[in-house]
Image 1 (cartoon, rainbow, N blue to C red):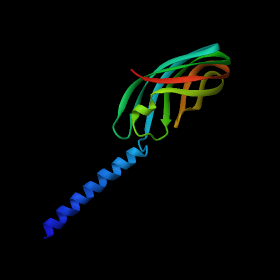
Image 2: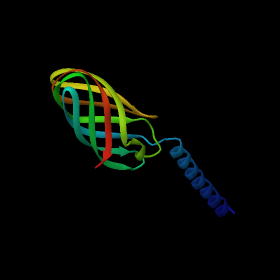
Image 3: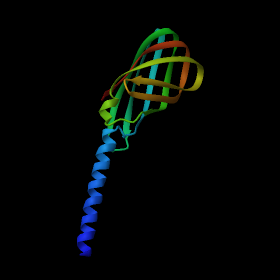
Length: 148
């Protein structure tokens, strides 16, 4: 009798864990972050390219290419190293790929640090990093993440 009770309890706990995991995934409970590096230039038009790796707490991982472009009143050249991005919770890493709307202001010379927030529908992303360069201005545009 004791063995049957333990067995039923184990099955119930396993089933509860599976249901809870499925519900957490349905509700967008996957947390992801990205390490990246990027270089950019701007003379009214701003353009940047980079690479990174997205890692999620459910084990999903992807090497990615980054591309930014936009316009505004902006001049300069910069390089971001050791950049970090955090995303809002999603149900899968696949929701992170695509274009994000961005608006930013920059002013720096030599070494600098900064951050920026972007959105893509219900997914948001915050970027931060340190870098080198000279830049000044205000810009708007698109930041795109694609698989390598």
